[in-house]
Image 1 (tube, rainbow, N blue to C red):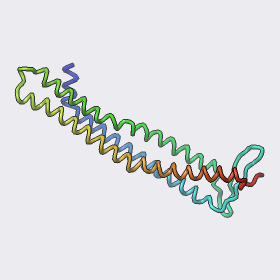
Image 2 (image 1 turned 120 degrees about the vertical axis):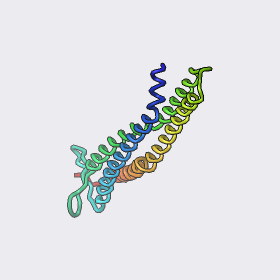
Image 3 (image 1 turned 135 degrees about the horizontal axis):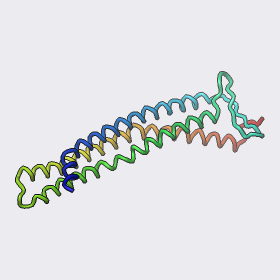
Length: 187
């Protein structure tokens, strides 16, 4: 028990800061990937204007023919959406780790207080200050890490995910409406 408390006292803050920096870097890398996916989807959706959409009665495949240049098919959009969703799932993993930082801070608080209590009547002022310093500093670093990571995760990757989901939802609604209204010609 004392070994674990000693580790937390010596390396608690280092662990919190190192883990926070790692997650921050991963969140920013995922944001860049998500932005690339978003731009691919935007480009594909913006090039869908003036297309003639057809559905093959035998295979039920939907295809779009562009008046000029290459057509972007619904399958192309689905492929972009699939890779986008894979990156979103990675983002979710790192996003779910953010609430652990205040818990790491509380663990450091408990460890610091346990060190003070274990010393009992033999506690010197230096040992008391050391234990309370561990308690307060790990709580501080845990809270700062959680707040900073939550701000980054919300303002960058989550915003990109939200904007892209709206674009894809709008596209899918238009496609469904076109099929319902028979605005799609069949081969």
